[in-house]
Each structure stands twice: as C-alpha cells, then as structure tokens.
Length: 142
Length: 182
Image (spheres, rainbow over the protein chains, first blue to last red):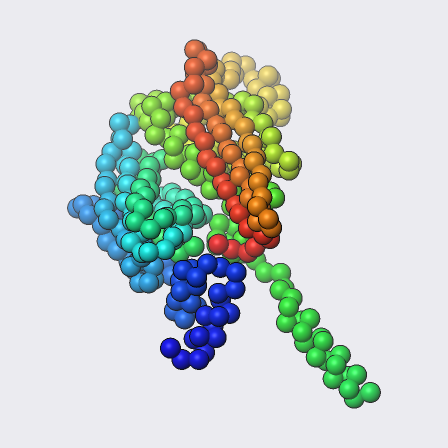
C-alpha cells in the first residue's frame, strides 16, 4: 500500500473502531455514492439499475414479490441482505408507476435502515392508488 | 507592516475557507441537518411514511368498495420541543386524501360558517378517529448522546371505541454533535 493511502487511513481512523476504518477508506477512494434502483416488471420479476456497484455488492437484493391486497391495491416486498462483514446503513425510498410508466405516487424521502452483517430486511410498499402497478425501489448507501 | 498584511490575508483566507454559505437543499434529500435534541423535518417524513404504509394495510383502509370518513382526534406532543403536529399528520392524511382513500373531516371555522348558511348541508359522521402521541427518550454515555422519538398513532372505530389499527415508529439518533446528512 502506498504512502498517501496509509496517511489517509490514519487520518480516517480517528476515533472509529479499526474494522470501520477499512470501510471509510474504501468510501474515500471510490466514486461518490450513487442511487441503485430495483423496478418490478409487469411480466413478473424485477430489473436492477446499478449506479453504485460497491454498495450493490454489499447489500444484495434477494427477491421481489408482487401481490394484490384484499382491497385490490398492489403490494410489493423487496428482500435485501447485508452480504458484507460490516454493519451497513441502507436508505430506502420508492415510487409507484402506472401501466404507462408514469409516476403516480411515492415516498420521496429516505428511510435509513441499519443492517447487521448477514441481516435480511424486507421493504414493503403498498400502493395508495388503484392505477399504481409497478414499484421502483431506490437504495442509497448511508 | 508587510508581515501584518500577510497575517491578516492568511487569517481571512482561513475564516472564509471554514464558512459554508447558505444554499437550498432538497427537503427530502440526504444533506439535511441531523439534530440530536429535536425532531427534524426528515424525522416527521420518515415516521409519517412508515405509519402511512402500515395504516393502509389495515382492514379498515384496505377496501375498494367504500371510502372511510375519518377525523383527527387528540394528538399529544410529549417531547421537550414545541412543534406543529401537522408536520407529521400531513405526511399521513395528505397522501390518503389525495389518493381518494379516505374522506377527512376538516373543522375549519370558515367552512363551518358557510355550511351553517347552506340549506341541507351536513357533515358526515366520522367512522374512525385518528389519535396519537409523540414521546421522547434521552440517554447518554460519556460524550455520546442518544435521542429516541416515539411516534404512536391509533385508529378508533367510533361505533365501538375499539382500536382497529395501532402503529408505532421510533426514530433514534446518536452522536456527539449535530451533523449534516446521513
């Protein structure tokens, strides 16, 4: 490891535990965090749109289930797992799209969700409008 | 004299370098101030969104055949800071009303006066009352402070006074100082 990286590591170490230093160093020397998307498809399954490969490899999308509630509204569940050896904080948000692909509604803000190593979390989104057909989940590193 | 000027110029550069000029931020973005001692604007959004998602799954709301009439009941702020409770309520009632999922009774005095002089006008009887409480819990260990804000809401069936839905969302923040972003 060259000298600048070592100096940077020493600077970042500060008061944090040793394990987190490596994570901070990786964040410092990789491009800024981008937003990753998972979009459900009308024919079933989902499509991934990855901007931040570093985070996508740490917080994996395991499964997406789309169903309809008793009242006839679309409900989607996204299962995600922290596949890394460190605690991660994923921030979630989502938008709903109608059959034509227009955004109908959504949760614009970010919901921070700390994930312990190996932990699986399920993000559930229920549509408020009957014309909301597909869900687009947004995932962002802490 | 020359040294004094150099020192002054250097000091000015240092001070200017530390200042952050005011800029506009997305109120639902990631660069907001995170306060340890108060409920931030993003905490209301976070809690409101979470409880809205829970509420629409309850049998009272998950019906396509009828639109329930609700009225906001007593919402208590039991935290040390004073804030307008509509910061939370609008995150829940706004999307529900706009999506046509509920009919919300509004006791606006102007509307009430106008209704009084309108023949045959009547306010529907609410089917459900939304009531709630916001609490806080603080703890610290050394210099590390922790604040938890507990948002509790319940939906009461007015015919029976039974709760048909209850939701709770806890927002916990920990650190030594307030910070920007997550």
